[in-house]
Image (cartoon, helix red, strand yellow):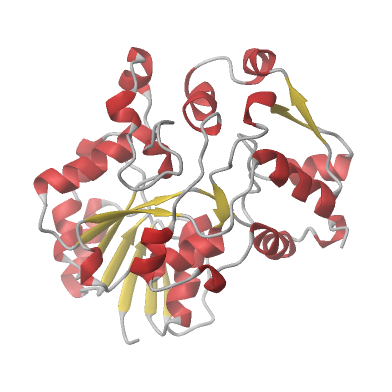
Amino acid sequence: MDKKVLLIAGGGTLGTHVGEELLRMGCSVEVICPEEKTSGDPRLRFYRTKATTEFLQELFAANHYDGIVNFIHYPDVREYEKVHFMLSAATEHLIFLSSYRIYADEQHPITESAPQLLDTSRDADFLQNESYALAKARGERFLRSADPDGHWTAVRPVISFSRYRFDIVNCSGRTVLERAADGKPVILPEKARLLTAGLDWAGNTGKLIAHLLFKPRTFGESYTVSGAPQMTWEQVAALYTRILGVRFEWMDTQEYLRRYAPAGAANWILTCDRFFERRIDNSRILAAAGLTEKDLLSIEEGLRIELACAGAQGLIRG
C-alpha cells in the first residue's frame, strides 16, 4: 500500500501503535511530536516539534497526505475549529480522536448510537467544567454540523494500555509496576470491581484505527475502538496479580473518593466513566476495518508484550 500518512502528536501510546501498523501495511509515516525519537526505517520520519498552526502551514505547503490522524486533545472545541479545514485540505482522509468516555451509562452493550453524557447529564458543574469527555463530544458535533460531507472519521478509543501506561480503574502510568516491585498493594474503589472495563491493548487500538484509513465508506462516521475480549476490573486485577504478583485491595467507594478523588476531574473519571458498565459492541468497527477478533490479541497477550517493552521482565512471574 503506497500511502503517505501524517500522525499529529503521534509519539505516544496510540500514535506509536498506529504508526507501526501503517508501516506493516506498506505506508510511509511522518510523525509530529515533541519527544526526541529516531527512526531506523526510511519510511518513518519524525518532526520534533509541536504542531503549531505555523508549522502545519509550512508543512502542508510542501506536502499532501493520503491520511492524517490527529491525536491532539482540544479542551476547547473552538481551538479545533481553527485548524479543521486546514487539516482537511491537506489530506484525503482525516481521523479525529474522540473517546469512548462520551457515552452515558444507559445502554448495554454500548453501540455508536448510545446516549451521550453531553445530552443526559444534569450535573451543572460537570457540564460547565469537564474538559475531556464533553470536549470530545463537542468536537464530533462540530464535524457533523460544519463539515457534514467531509472526508473525516471520528474514533472513540477505550482506555489503551501500553509500555507507557499500565491501567486499572483510575490507576495509570507505572504505579502498578512500582507497587509490584515494592510489595505494596494497589488500592481501588469497590464500586468498579465487577463492572466491565473499558480497556484494551494499544496495539489492538492502533491496528483498528490504521485499518479505517483510506476507506471512503467510513467518511462521516464514528466508531468505538475496542477489540479484545472484555474483562471486569476484578478480572484485570487478577491478571496483573498472576503476571506481576501485585496485590489489590478494594476500598469502600465513599472512603476511596474522600481520600483519593475529592473533587473535580479526578472524581469525574470515576463517577462519569469507571463507575459505568463499559461493555462494548465492537461489531461495527470490525466490519469497517475489515478485521475479525482473530486479528487482535487478548488483554493478557498485549500486557505481556508491553511489560517486556517497559523493561519489566524481572517482575514477570511466567
